[in-house]
Length: 98
Image (cartoon, rainbow, N blue to C red; front, side, top):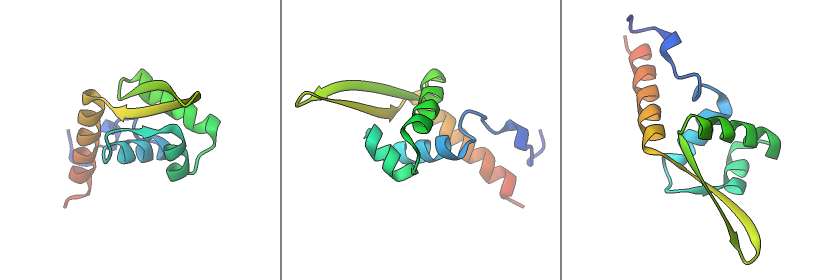
């Protein structure tokens, strides 16, 4: 494999919104939907689609609960997601090094 093999980038992570979500989640224990929406500047529907894709890949876990009778959905990185994100960053770093 050459050092500049962009085709080895993880397609699940390599989208602006999913990359932003992964970058946010690696810095916190968990984040709720509204926090992610605010930080990523995405619509409810768009963010939901991207979060579902990350969930299906088992990169994020979802916790749904009610707080004072209001629904709250929180997301966190799984061990698999953390490893995938670190591998993604390592590959990017290898690509840009001379």
